[in-house]
Length: 348
Image (tube, rainbow, N blue to C red):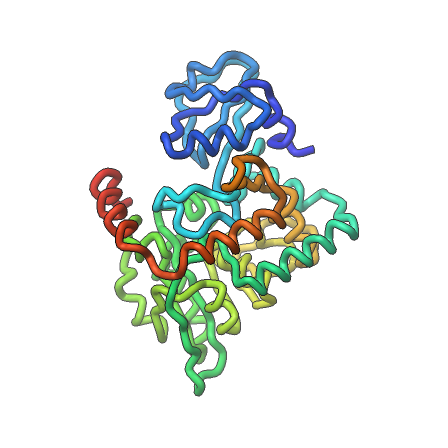
């Protein structure tokens, strides 16, 4: 059993510095525990379990025997952006590290490296993958525009942008760490390809800062696509080249070749072309074994209907219904709320 899975069954969980909107979700993650919210790690008693968001540093010396669990968004998250403070449908709880930190093994890497994938689980993963593709589901399920592939072009490569201040680049991209440098590398390696760049939706919403020199993207690509739904866009291209973007995993689900210039969690298992290979990841996995680990065994799925924990299949049901209710366009009140967020939180 993974450390996160066993430790999350503790009777008391101390949760460090969680914002008010995340507190109900933390409680939902640990239904059998009493969750105590604290603002200083020093308030965690000896032998306790401490929950921390993402790669947030734990300041100061912890009491003896304290175990740290790291929480983060899952891979089928919501209809809308996390930066918009939209409640998630999935989180992960990791007792070794976190999935985007390639500098050391996470629970997910440990699972993928050592788990025996029984045939029934692999078949379940295949069915889950097929439905995700058929329903055009992705992490955020945003975007209203439809991108038309030019009729006269040859190979089309999609390059998804990332938020350059995110920990996934700091801990998962040992060489290239900027969107512009990625575009330059893709263009140099593929001078004849039609390259499409899609800025990160948090950046397009004005909630996170543009990357350095990102305004120069058109010098290195043929088109910039800002509001296309990722589920549709992935089906219209031939290849996807990424730093550590989840779009690479979403492309694998759709049978697209993926080149990784960083070390995302889905690289190193024989399914991607890796410019900077991970020396720890030597096992070869089938696509549905990867899906079984990433989408079934590792995350928690958090119902928005009854505040309980649900299966991946039930989460897909809720996502599809949520998207049908929400529609494709951003409502005016959400745009106003983003203005308030930018004023209060700032753009990082």
